[in-house]
Length: 298
Image (cartoon, rainbow, N blue to C red; front, side):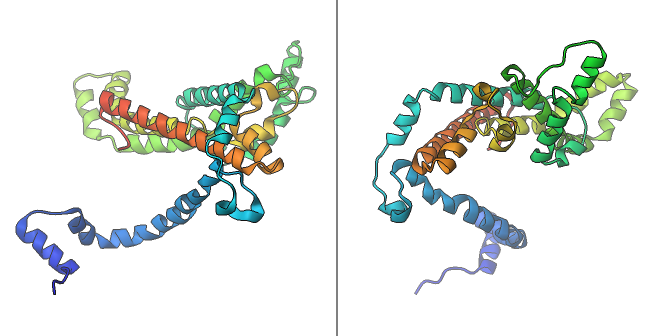
């Protein structure tokens, strides 16, 4: 009876033949995979097992019948969503907020503390700063002789407030990543450039920028992969009846329709549509980046 080789035998065979399979490298570094196992298990349980519920997007889900007991309706909910009068405005609002956020978040300045502020606290601060009557910004405008502005009550200002506050809050995380990338730049490159008479601006442009460009590209690709994921929490907290025409996005619509109006199948279909768009955009941007800069996620 033929027996499978043990891990020790696989390592010995790999050393003798010189042909090293992926299993050889895994066995050689098995301690690292043991440390990685809890993370993989966590991702599998909380990210992949719940994907079983995606099928309710194709069913008329009834809670007391369960997922498999609910009738199969195919693409009914997708067709209903695509043909609904709200589809175009929801899609446009979501894409606009995501694209503007992606654009301005990519050119952030160095700061740390706002990243550690929760979304609820951030929106509360916005309400205090931007209040029309006694907000700090409007008090300054009034002191300078200007007319106070209702930043939170006018739809025209919603996107600007949302994106600007997002830049302020999220700058810290990207700054840490870029500083970590800059710390890996070889100091000998700067020393050689200084000897050759390069100025500070020239050293930044020809040394620092090329060194952090792969990191920036990866961050940009990952951001593009979440282009349809405008988090409902902040948008929902900033919403009011006066700015609803530009603040209602897919995530807030799913929350209100799915949880408050108990339309689970319909909103699951919308969520699946959202994720498919994210995957397509991620693959597209990743492919373009790989061709243009040879830097990609995979």
